[in-house]
Length: 112
Image 1 (tube, one colour):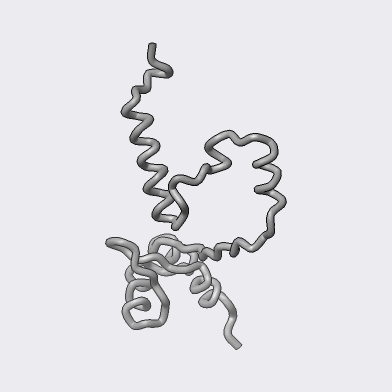
Image 2 (cartoon, one colour):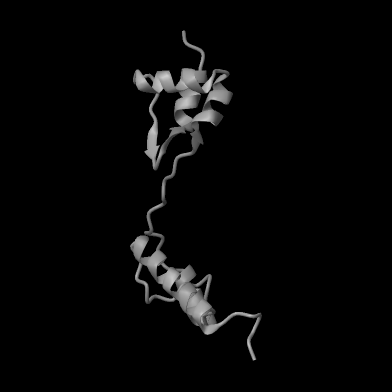
């Protein structure tokens, strides 16, 4: 009998995707992930009380060009022109660009 209508192939695809994600994140794909797989109490306790030497990831907020233009109260074309002139930093992502929220905050600050 199948559980929840899922086949063995589905489980293998999920495992392959988790392995690929771990490799992409620079992690050991064979290491047990505490959130996804159960651990015994001793292992879980030692994992949480270990040294906190893991670096904190730093991320930046980004907006699409349309969202950024709306927040700045201008048209998308005006914003794209400012990007082309180098007045606003834009991050290339695929076929479009994203605007860091720090750029929006910088432009919204009163000058003087």
